[in-house]
Length: 471
Figure 1 (cartoon, rainbow, N blue to C red):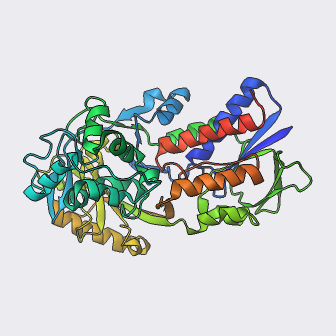
Figure 2: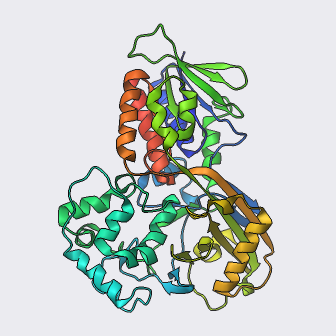
């Protein structure tokens, strides 16, 4: 019996183990799959709390429909009837302590329609003129990478970026856009500039009809009726108890010295004193652990310098009458120039009505700007107090919440800084030469969203099957 070990039980590892078992069963091959998770639960940042008819998400609350790996997996698992689409409504951005509508006819804050910024008070007339000049700004030189913030400022000026684009983009990665790698985060912007001479012209030419909008339209995000952990639970059921090893930490991965260079034969030494043999290994744990696990392989050293950020979110439940206040919509993001410590607030009861009982309201707020990481380490009471003070200032909410829930995610948001793609490619080349049969997948590498992680897990399965000559 040959063994394939998946290290890490988040959505990437669960996906990899699921597709590995499926392919092995299809081919009737004598392989065993093991999934090893250091903590007591599966799912990683996907974590649903079901309380008093509320469905509360501690981590991500949805996934983008147009990125197909997540949708395909949900369908394959027979969960199609559980899918729920987000309700749409006017989204807003807080600039200079005032809420402004996000203009329709834009894509991630970049105006696509010619009149998108007409009547948009959050941008000055000078700022609007600077945006229009993007159509004639020469394309930049061909570069292997650059800062996302530098690229966008060069093309659009500061005002649009700081008041609209940055709040929308940086929330995805919890990053400072002036430190983010363009090629690791939004390479399509660079490709549009190089191909069309203008990002706006490129978006006009390539965006599907109806996608260039942030107004009322068909929701682009999906979740599961009883929370995203439904997906985790279904995958765990498919894998079975004989596959999953919880509370089991991998301390070190050692390649057996007497084996051929091109062959995978590994000893995984566990924290409980045991070990596992593996002919192939899929590593889905955060990059920061790899230099320790693969001690003696200096090509993992770039991961030691790859930063991680922390975030916290606060869920607040109210009687619906406490939060209406005339504000219609799905929530708001906060400009980088604001003194607020919140970065965004979702009106969850509006965006995801199935999460909240009738007559109740559910808000989800976020703290932990790149320059304000210390807020994550404050007590629950301190964080809730900050959020309540700011919600009162912005939305006029004075009633005490019926309950709150604070979730901290410390050092879990990988930062794709400039040069990330090149560094990753170099690590993978060395990995292929020195540790054949070991593969990397997960949010540290090629996308932090659920579909990105699922796609990486499935791609790693293809690599393993090719390596082991499983057709």
